[in-house]
Image 1 (cartoon, one colour):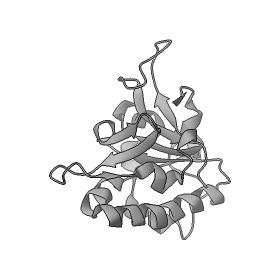
Image 2 (cartoon, rainbow, N blue to C red):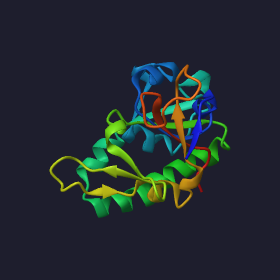
Image 3 (cartoon, helix red, strand yellow):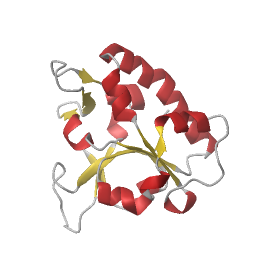
Length: 173
């Protein structure tokens, strides 16, 4: 399992983040975009992004979409619509900007099958513990390149402990 401790993920790549104090280091909360605003930007990406001195865009609302869709619909939407928007972002900024999805409940809802390092999203309560293969849908089989974001002053923080604040992929294809 890979990890990243330096802050380069805040300026490049694709991340899923759930720790509020880390979010506040990247962007003012009022500048976080909704998923709807993110899709609207796809028509004309701005030159300067609102986070991390113009190098990061933070989007909220992914959780709500995943919770409102049936598992098969969520998989299709992730693999087609959301992934296409992420790829458009990467292409426009030539992989020189960060796209970060804010997932407040990500710590408890993102899981990983340790044997295969496949990431999944636990669906909303009351849906028989169904899982959406978020890693396969978003990273298209490149889950081996996913890094756990660790933020800690400790030399060797726990991969699953408080230092684990998100997931980062340098570039999806």
